[in-house]
Image 1 (cartoon, one colour):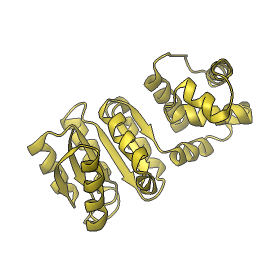
Image 2 (tube, helix red, strand yellow):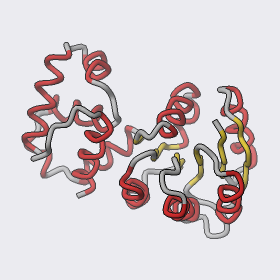
Image 3 (cartoon, rainbow, N blue to C red):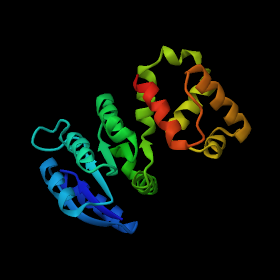
Image 4 (cartoon, rainbow, N blue to C red):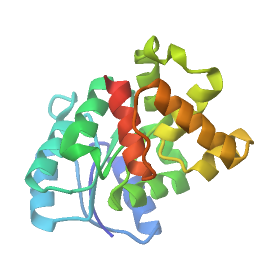
Length: 213
């Protein structure tokens, strides 16, 4: 898989190059600014972009804005954004771009879990939506009142559901059977007035759309 990487920190950038290369990916460009990111994507047409949110010169949301603009210019371009902190507006802008498919939002601390990071890269490149569990929790807290209708277990299931997990994965995490998970799904979606879909990514997007409100 051909990757364009944007990260202004030299040590972290080199570390990410090493991780991506270790998992068989070809990092065709590794740059340090949002402007260089745009040029690199136009030149290389990568399979995925991995970018920091805050980049020179302002260190605010340059990387995010570049990613959203690139997805507008190159429809379907997978983008995985990395951030030091949970920024609700950053998550919303990213997830709203190109209908929210083939996008990811991870906290940088997640990079330390190498296999998890590599799996996220692969999933985003394949068209999935990958959102850090802490971002999910922040979004849930923002909509605390509407979610009051859910039981504590249903809120646990919702958080796992929004991470894009399968029924089997959720059942394993909560030590219950898949039938119980299915019942929780039905109850959650009914209480939140969401339509049930068997396609996992649509289910993730529906939940995140509700949480973004």
